[in-house]
Length: 113
Image (cartoon, rainbow, N blue to C red; front, side, top):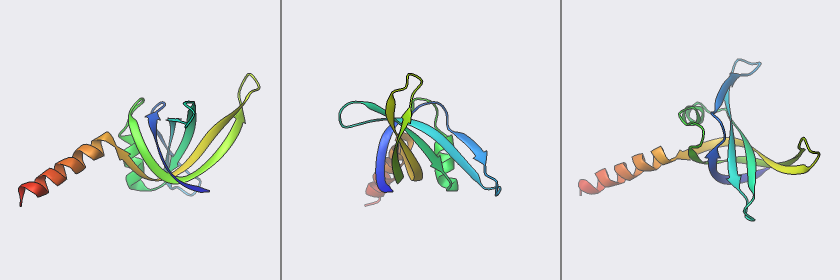
């Protein structure tokens, strides 16, 4: 397990599901850039209600930054080539909408001085 901060763009819309125990979860796919310029697909799952709500508010192509437990993996594509992929158990989400809200809060607190 790697404690990671990743950023990228959503690939498709996040989806919510219910596990065998009745607990909800949300999954998403995010395209992230590797250091060499390649694009990797990161499979994301979130269990925390606030994180799920943040992910479900986003849509295909939206930018997102996430932190959580990262597991690098490989898979074999249809052509038989081995490709890298990432699995992330997401603990926190930061979106452009959050940044705007935080900037507004800072500006509002500066106005009070």
